[in-house]
Amino acid sequence: MLTSVKNDKVKALKKLHTRKEREKTATFFIEGFHLIEEAVNSNWTIKEIILQDGVYLPKWADDFKIVEVSENVFQHITQTKTPQGIGAVVNLSKVTKFDGNHVLLLDRIQDPGNLGTIIRTADAAGFDAVILGEGTVDVYNDKVIRSTQGSIFHIPVIRDNLIERIQNLKKEGFSIWASALTNSKDFHTVKTNDKVALIVGNEGSGIQHDLLDLADELVKIPIYGKAESLNVSIAAGILMYHIKG
Image 1 (cartoon, rainbow, N blue to C red):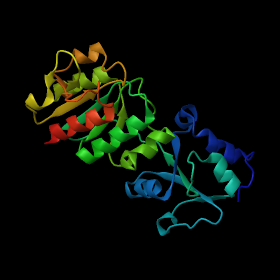
Image 2: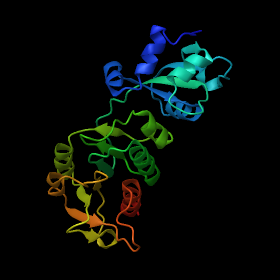
Image 3: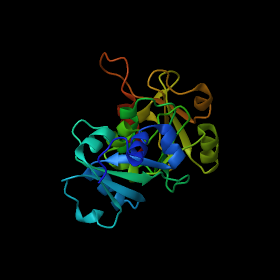
Image 4: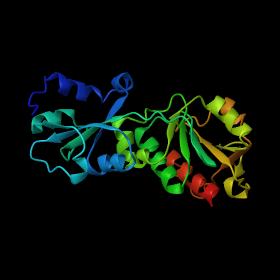
């Protein structure tokens, strides 16, 4: 059992909360029974399970390497306020392709809670992939993972150059929709094609102009009250469900 926070193994686990270390080791850290079980059921590669002394080990964890740690060590590596005493080191996804007719493209989404909620909503809406452009927060950020509620393990999440990806999607017959406030049509007046790629943009500045220029349709969600705008995750949800409908 690991009991010292100065142990090299414990230091390595703590470092996984930084993007640099996640990319260096091609692994990330998750916490809690639900998230780990979702990863297992979705056939992600679990390198090891970190178990706090005295915490019950579920049957589905029997096949994995277990590293036992004391309570003070788990408190040191946790990012949650009320940890469940179980975590796991998981290999990063190497997926770069997807199958399907509906994809969401994200331009510079910077809030981890927004990104996690968007991924969870894309999963619920039956979208086939989420593509993250440059400037979007790391999908393996702790808060992003928790906000997905396990959906990160259900739907391909791919980091890519959005301009190149959109050009390729056009060649594959996708209609490109972009959410924009100016020069746009109310979304419910726009006919949906069989294959649609939806772009949503940065919380403050929206979608970059070079991406807007590639769109086939600029769409907006009408505001009937006095709110200035919708949260990007809410807007993405409304548009995705419309496109799937």
